Image (tube, rainbow, N blue to C red; front, side, top):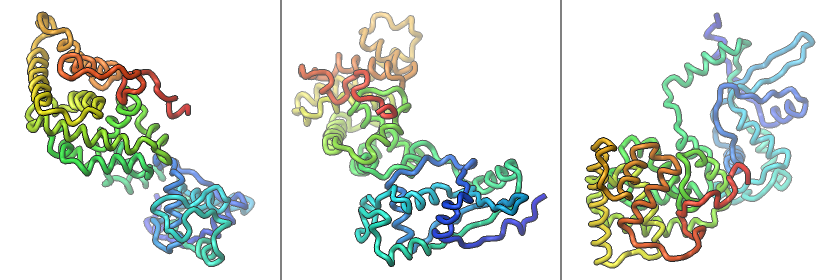
Length: 373
C-alpha cells in the first residue's frame, strides 16, 4: 500500500531543465489518463505568452524512474501538452500568433525573442508533483480520485477549451447577441449551462454553409477546418441575425408551439436562413407565412399522435415531415426530408440559382470532408 506522504513531494523544474532532458532523451511524454484533444497553435502560443508574463500554470505530475544502470527517465504523467508546447516553441516550430498574445512578442518565433525574454522563458519554474513508482492500475485509481468530483466535459465544452479561432468566436457572438436563443424555449437552463446551445448553433452554422449534416459527426472537424481562417464569418452572422429577427416576428410565442422542439426548430431556422437575402418579409407575406407555420405544426401534431396507418388522407408533405421527425430525426436524410416538406407547403420558393449557391442546399460534399482536406 502506498504511503500518503509519498504524494506530498513537490519540486520546481525550469523550462531549461525540460529542454535538456528532452535533448538527452531522458524525458518521456505520455498521458494515459488524459483525454484532452491535441492543442492548437493558438493555445500553445497562449501558454508561452503566460510563461513570458511570469504567470502561474497548473502543476504537472511526473514520475522519475531509474534502471539498474543508474539511467533515470522522467515521465510526464499529466501535463504533456504544456511541455510539448514549450518544446515546439524552443525548436522553432511555433510562432506566437493570436489576438490573446501580448503585442510585444506577437508573431515572433523563439529565435526572434530578445535576450531578456529568452532568459525569462528558460528560467520559468513549473510546479511539479513527483509520484512514487507504482503500477498503472494504481495510477488510474489516483487520477480517478482527483477527478471524482469533476463533471466530465461534454463535446462542446471540450471544443470551447480547444478552439480559439474566428469560427468559435462567431458562434459565441451569435449565441450572446440575440434573445431568440434564450427566449424561444428551445434550450433548457442546463443546455445553456453546458453550452449545448452553442453546439446547436454550430450545427445550424455548418448546415447553412455546407448542407444538412448527419447528426454531429463532423462538427469538430469543421471547428478545426475554420480555426485559423473563416472567410464566411460576415455572411454567416448577417444571415443568422436576419433569420433570428424574422423568426421572432413570425412566431412571437414560439415557445408554445412545436417549433420550440430542437428537430423542428433546426428545420425552420435553416429554411428561413436559406431565404435570408429576401428578409425581412413584407407585413402581409409575414402574416401568411406565420399562419402557415402554425397550421403546419398543428397538422403534424395531430398525426404524430395517431398510429401511422391512420395518417391516410393527410397531405403527403405533412406525412413525410412527421415520419422524419419521429424517426432518426437528426439523420441527414430526415433533416433533408423535413426541409423539403416545410418549403413545399409554407415558405416562398427559392429562386433558380444553382443548388450549390444555396447556403443550406442539401448536397453531397460541397467541400472535401474536413478530415480529408
